[in-house]
Image (cartoon, rainbow over all chains, first blue to last red; front, side, top):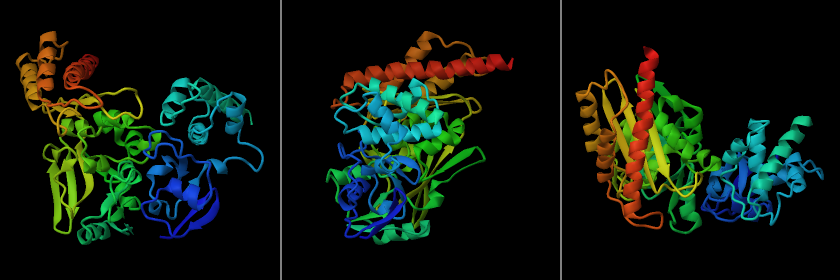
Length: 156
Length: 293
């Protein structure tokens, strides 16, 4: 099937998509956007988190057909050219990136959190990021990065 | 695999009759896991996610009707205060990503004994509206489930909506799992107190082949509260009454040993949860009564 959608503000299309494929596969294998990561394929890990029509979702649980006509934002869509998004910079500055596999999903989930709440409490951060697993950091550095990003974004 | 994208509900119902083997997909949080792991290979997907009408909920005459596309996030941000038990359960579902996609109707269609929405729906006496080319039928929730991952849904039928009476008293929900997020319930329990009708509704999850009510426990509590005049004049519940209720609740279940928990643990946990949720809900009744005086 043909799938046409908007990804990071650009019209994209993919041909010969198997209807059973998911949006994550579509992004990575058909459109070459490999920022969103494939770890669990069952919505457990959040590594494939993207925006679908403004909502934070696991791309692995959206069928390719459901994405037809949708507006998708992936981690590739956050930086402004070579300038990293403040959330990306905060993750680097706080050492919240170790193996990096969970990072794109956490960046998107953090983006969603900070769009709704400019200065979230630690409880809100942990609750909102509960769908994103990290097996390296123990989460402390990630929570610190979210706090830093919130501060940076409040200043700018 | 075919991909069917109906333009209207009528279209969807007609397509389901023409393609009874088509698997309906909305939030995809169950269906896509099945496809990703090659556990299911549907002949066709019937995509209901673009039908905007399904995403709506309405509230009139003491009933909230949730369209089949209403997500857990929609409930939390929408009719939560009318449906306190379901709202608490909704907040325990998966993660923000899952709550943004998963629906109560999908939970029903999957009919897992562990579905988080089921105990609140059982406790509140919900009704499932099911449509097909043959017509509409309204299935009381207590007769919806017929086995593990099996419901009364026929191959040509689609869930259109779920009707839930709005709360007429405190409600509670409790769920045990290995962590707070992304957990399939080891065991779950919901209680709904109806102060107008003086009824006690219950629902048990993950502790029998299907979600079940603890009807005997509910009847016991109703009559005991009436006998002592507590409905009129609420006061702290005697420990013996709470113990008796929770023992009756735990005897309503038929759990198994599996990877998530043992039979013994489930029975014990259910007893604890029944006692706790009753105490939480009843404390609200007592406080409400005192505040009103």
